[in-house]
Image (cartoon, rainbow, N blue to C red):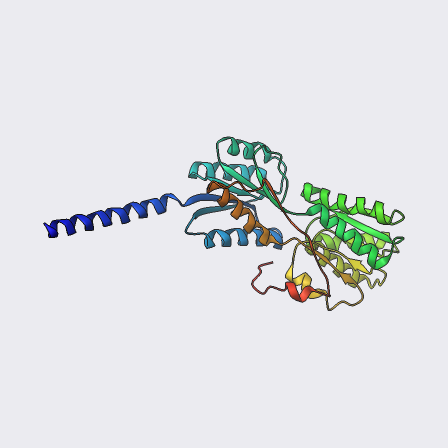
Length: 312
């Protein structure tokens, strides 16, 4: 009798372990990541940190990641994730035209966390840096360094949508309050060092006096600094940036003639987007919008932000 009881208890324990194992498998959430193809170091960082966070949460998350060249390709990849059974999607769309497919995914019950660029979709979560505050802090920094009557070049990037719009708005609105006599010259460029170099070389030829540059991106700023160096100009005293590029940080203490500044907008923020998705899938109620505060980095504190493990 005792032997039979032991056998029954052993079988019960084995069944319990099997059920627990099945349950554990069932609690793994399927999470999809949609990112642009790598055309910029910061974008590479986003894909890297999104995947890294999913790997850290491997006991909870099964993930699939796609990179795309345009909105059409990203839309097709979103459809593939839906077919795969994604329960949540981290979307980092850099182009217009993603609103409809993202809304369709949400309407199917999929949790969508929009990273960085704003998407007009009802029910979407969003994780982003404070783009407008980056402009505000850039304006204050420039006025502090060169005064309220200087000539400043603003390098906007219209193709980046809300990112450029908000950063420019923060800058222009703040200048209107603290330095209304500032002479602002606005030019369009792109978030690459090649475009920063090419466009700012032309800007230097067209303008004989420039006190500061409000650049929105570290890679653009690297190109701007190269253009300044190649021109031999000494009038530019401030170049701002944004993003968190390690190469850019390393340039800060070596150039004592120009205040090189970056509004930290780290690609690591995408890890928060993964956390928001997992929290929502776990039945929690994360905030619909999570905004990561701005941190200013320049020669005085850049050593604190050097990260040899960063891909950006």
